[in-house]
Image (cartoon, rainbow, N blue to C red; front, top):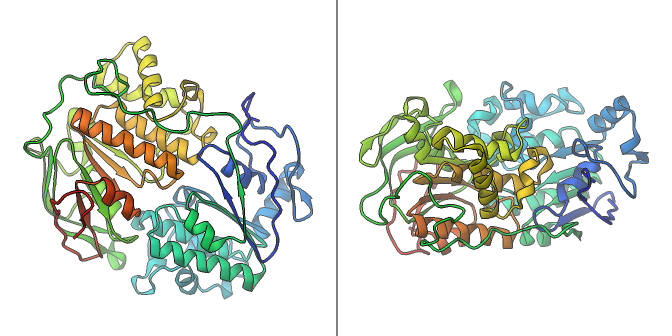
Length: 478
């Protein structure tokens, strides 16, 4: 319980050495809460109202702090849904992996990285996390967990942000280490194919109360008070010239001997009312591209224009209006949401910053924005740690929408959502772009989702690829 709100009810789970257990269910059902309970890490302010948690013969929720730390360090390993936020950005991968290893002298970092399907020829062990993609950070966190040789391995959405081939590889890896080392593995997942391929058994959870689990249908364009109607004046007409153009864009990650070119000669036009899909394997530069468009990653070459006006590469050199017009919904919302702010305060900030709305109107808009992304108004009083991964993703989207952008950059926004909620979120994005002329960019490893929704697809195939946009009907990939 969190206050009077039930987070989890009547959940029974027994972990067996050598077996892989899946925990499934819609966003907000309590999957992460259950997993975190197994390491004695309930959300702040939460309490157990019934039942108990016995882990390796210990009542883990009653252990003294020192004994709990010892148990976590030596016998348990937990990889969260946003593993990048748990990796020290100042440490190189080699030190991250060996920091808590069971035997540092006998731990081969390159071998562990190969185990989790990271390329051996790119010297990833010498990079810091900022030089890794989201999918690579996830696998480094898994390698770090395996280096501890735990008796129980707990993984929260281990395949989020990974392409289909890597998901299959991770499934085979988990099965192999469970059987070879006798580890009891439990993971949460929204991916039924991954569960079927990997798990020996599955526990399905359902929300303890009936939440608004899917975004409301997008309003008709003529509705004057719709949750996503702009406060900032008329929108650009749909069609016509591009709102954002990129020419000959090139970018790299890392520095020195870890420097790697990930984008080369990329041309891209984003037109009002369209959805552009960006696809490709983990590490090919998808996130680097959208971060570059948002002004968060400095390109090596190329030019950007917004509404036919030159756009500075760094967001610091862009005007406030230019920053408002391009909004990014990041892959890992936990690291992007201020943990000290409530959801309401997070959504109010852009309303005051860009539109100077009075307090009463801000409160109304916050409720409208939450409704637009499928969350009830009372979520405004919660902090990020009181939300599930999918709920945090929707709050992150609502924050971007609060700025009333012309361009919305979505980096794996459906990876932490169940199938129904992901489909409803895509319906919302469809309504935004057709009803308001919003240009949407969607980074995703879900190729059927992208090809079924996108007006055009930009494939990024590798570190030195030079792709171009294919202006073809939805469903086509070149």
